[in-house]
Length: 407
Image (cartoon, rainbow, N blue to C red; front, side, top):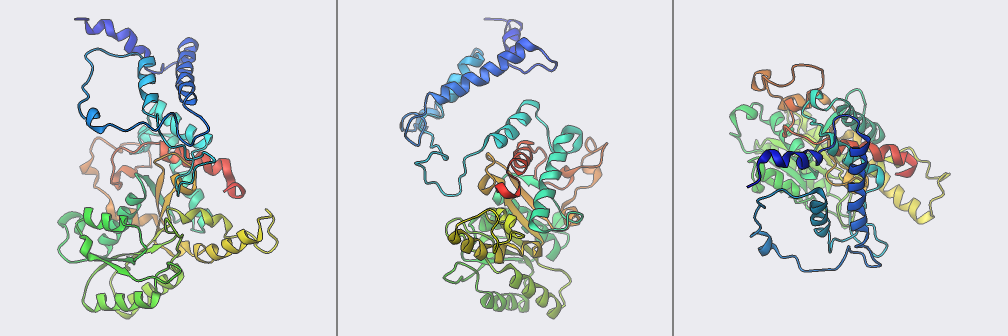
């Protein structure tokens, strides 16, 4: 059997060098190019890579770890073979829904953190990549019309996670202390019938229960019927039910239905006053698709400087009349990997008031070996401890690449 020390030279070569080494750096680049060349060889006129071969999961379940290490070249060939049959979302013959082709800027935003492995738990382990998180969220908040000085947020593992954050904060508002003692009441979540099923997923995982998700009928335009929303909220409050979250759907996956967030905010505030509630139910805008339409909030649809077709202008006017009210929400879910052309996964939970995140905060005693320096410590309140820098870096890349006019 080969001694482990004899493997070290080849294994060390598989790591990027910590100091500049032109020969090794060139080999690293060549390895990347070789992988890209192998993938390029799979391209054709068809909207898939290679051939549509059957996917054999049963064989995959029988796979065992090799006894001996492989080379980078061997690994490269194996990995590229896994892309055989993969759909090409950006192919001109492709008609996929809400799965954008990542652009080169977004890919670079994913690649660079993969090389240096920043951890967004805190600034000690992420440094300037933590700045990228703050910059991307601040840019997006300002674009949507939020107060940059008050707004904040964190990147997380998808649109479902943005709902988890919103509902968890709302749960702590309506049932204070649940972060320590658990749920002792029966809080509810209110959303439309067109809301994404992720609302029920979040309810299930948070222990609220899917039966405590109240769904309100929608109009033929796929927006919540606010008159029915009002009557249902009144019923729940009269029954003494705590309302953890009211979810406004700001762009459904299929028909792009947009709830009347302005009216929903008015209802929430009026009922808080009428029922003398000691809390304000969290009003969350599930805008994981619709957020990008905020670039048109200050676009002059009359003069139309970018010269969009008339039909496009009419569609934009219909969307902007709802999207412009995103600042009225307490929190907003963003998917840059949908309408921001970033690679998976790039999602952010944005809150209108950064202080709300402190409702989820852990004590310093709970993490004695972390957060001993610097000022940016999102790991104190995030669900995840380890968070990749690829989400914010790819989002920032595309915000810079596209700008307002490009988006």
